[in-house]
Image (cartoon, rainbow over all chains, first blue to last red; front, side):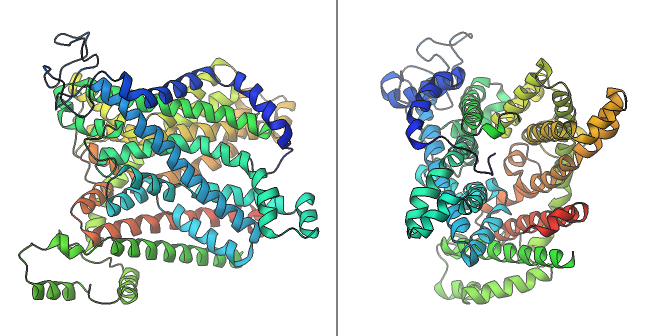
Length: 297
Length: 306
């Protein structure tokens, strides 16, 4: 993780280096994430059945097509209400992607703003922000999220706000540290001497220089947020039924787990695993890409 | 040194104050608990009586002050549902959560430390790549899903282990593995980077120059120092696991603190929820304070920085 502001590419060359970077991104991660984004966009078109209604003419707990009793119309089987698992998985990718990205965006915005404020303004503002950050860090994030979700009530947008409100602390801490060193750098000092307002210094000189770090942190937060959403939905305080979400599907599969209907549990879990794995791979690559100092770690 | 400790203690108290006040306010912002607790046919004067009995008719600051006063005496209020002191319920469940947490910590150490050492010693060989892959999977597989798959394999298909409840060691294996899995990955990463750092240091180079065999250098010199941060993390993780294992405890019907919290949430038992959450915060603030002070003893540089 970058705590020091190393030599960063200038804004002008960034566009070109990004293009070059796209070619060396980890293939597996790009394929999985790109594929999922496509699936989420086209779920209405490619899903063979309505994800919230029982398949006409099908039974409940039909196994995948290759097993005895399975049917080709419901490739991955049906659930306890006779709904098509594949269609629910395809639609469920929307929830995971939207919550993962939006939750990270909310967390990143809160944390980056507070980190810059604490680091640049300093003094009592810094003290207040850092003590609140400490208090937030004192609770295990997932316990805090469950607590908030139970208090606010289940809905996808509530979950986004809640996860954003829980996972901002890491940004605040890391970015405050970066800003403390940036503040002493000459270009910042010169801008201040030249009479630039605080707001202008933050906008023109501080923010662009912490964006790399914020991006790396974001790439590492997405997976955590996706797993947190699945956990909340599993516990019944996340995305409410009948909306298809992977965590909710796992929760609905649980009462009949002992009956050995493995496809209800395995498929949604594999989906979560794949998407989180892809974001981790992508994040690892991005970290090395944006922060040469961590390359040998 | 005493100034350092004083400042840390002060910070911890401030942290606890902010945390408890936040929890307290959020609980009260989300509606009247009595509306959910009392029956629909309850008369208004009965509601008022109950409200008075639970102290809910007083202003928030007064309620908070009373709560904190009692909390310092070890009293966290009384559960609506169980009609028992929250602290009693908490300490009833604590041993179970400790058992699970310790087992999970052992598993995370047993997987993470050896794998981390091997991957650091044999850096950039296929050993290292396998270890990196394991670490990546550890962070990507949701612990609760791992728990479900373990139940499927070891209880439903193989019939080796019981699915739920607490009893002998066989009840602990699956929840501990599901809980420790994620932490094993973070142990692995920390052990690896810590070993790499120590192996690159001057005194290790000196030990090698003296002609000591590799095994001695790694086992006697590098290992000891590299493991200080690892065991610190294990200690902190243990406290986190004791308090944060909600979903694993729910899946395996493990009678620990996490499930107490879960039950409290679904029964709208807000003194219980408030008490359990604040206890979690208290334990984590306490362990962090201990770690900070211990590190300041070991490393004087920490005392001088802010």
